[in-house]
Image (cartoon, rainbow, N blue to C red; front, side, top):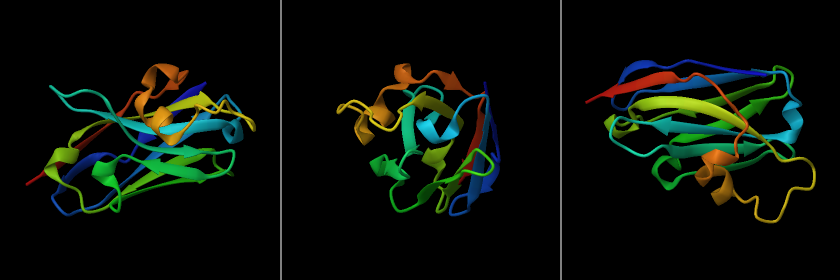
Length: 133
């Protein structure tokens, strides 16, 4: 199993980046993919999730209206389009995958996906995003 992130970099406030999470080794369609971020001195935070069984998407309040998550089922890749970047978005960004399947438990909600990193089986190595003011 592999998850490989790319697309991070240094950008000025207000700019944009698109992160990619290329996956392999598991059934992409049955999994939830979430982008987490971790900044020094802060707790790890779930940023956005996509449930590939039905395409449902979820966002933490801090990025709603600015970030968009999407999946390319032909490439087994998840993207995170980040617009209107702010200095507080600076962090290492990781993608992670957890099995959801066609009939997940009722507690598998957007809040669960974003706030339960211990539920994720597979993680990438991360890509750094730095936003200058």
